[in-house]
Length: 525
Image 1 (cartoon, rainbow, N blue to C red):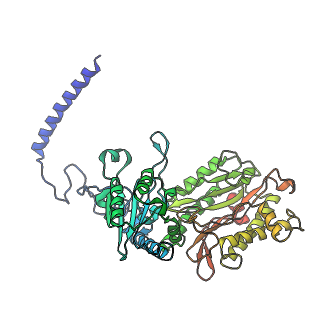
Image 2: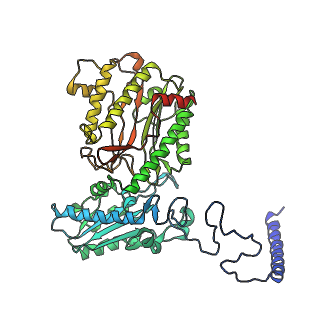
Image 3: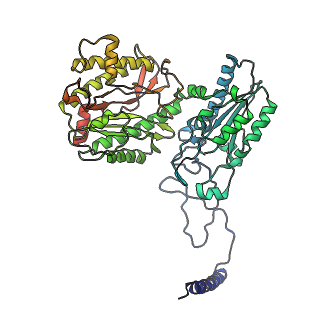
């Protein structure tokens, strides 16, 4: 049979039938222009309000698409005036002004005191590929997101200030491209970007080099703030290097991190939310854990429960370590079966609205602590309670002080249970404890898990900072200086803490169970 011939005959008949139907319809239902409130013939009328509380889709209005969710397109994610969930456009604009003020103040007190004109160049991230044409999930460069609110790749933000204090913000964006958008989704484009992102102007990113060349000629003494080491965009690194005197560039990263380390009220609310989501997800995972499950299944549970509660994704590859795997601090294989009598150490957090949580809990897979497990867990719980109490007080005014305090307290309690000899004292006691917990007890937390790494852990904690408190005990099977019943045990308890005024703290992960009785009851339920 000639399939091509049959197909053409079918298409011919179909065209004839459509012409007849169209002619009949035009006689019985003449075409008319509809008002904006009219319903096209043959379609059911849409009620003016919906039981869900959402406005019905207005088919008469053109659909405007953007390169990221907006309150008009995603009202279930963003309120009016929010550019990213929980953060209003005005706050992002205030961040840009604050950075430029810091740039001027920093320059005025250093070697650059004679330079009055500055341009800050902040690049976005680019798409990364796991294989040919298959991208990883895109995550925006954090500093760029903090200052722009833009979630699109291959974009650049520039901030300028002159000798008179006049400021200008420019966003270099990808132009609209119907073919590219067919494959990769919509772009905001040059025309809409000034309004969407609250910048003074938007320019095609392909014109970045010409813009910087003009700036260099107009401001020959201008200082370029750019950090090539943290730039994903190779062409931007080359452009800035070619145009500016790269040897006198200044990195803006430390100044941006100084802004980011202290959270605004809106950021604190987002930190509360991401910690609540992760806490509930871990609780549910503990409750549903059973002997014989794989670490991978527990990973899947905490991931599922986090996303179902609104998290974008996990904040980092979780550690799900059963048995002696918990003695490997960054164990992420997550492919072993957790056997009856073993404990699980889970280090997991999620990202919500661009802000991350970071929690660690340790529990017995069968719901009942053995005596050696109970001894170490109660010891570690006591250390963590005392560390939380010491924040902003003597021994806990900085994160480095908190680490020293942990080593001494952990050493003292390990001596009491016979794991460190009584004769060890002073500095040696702290060193002995460090062998049981060879990592820092805290780091800053925010848009990144290890947030604002340019900020020293030796500075005084101030209200608005968020940090972790995470003492641990890890005893390898190979250790011969501890009784056999303790070998192969790994434990960590980690909470996220908001520093508040008057030496107060708020444990953002308080809802995640950690008391022995609560854990055993939860699994038993």
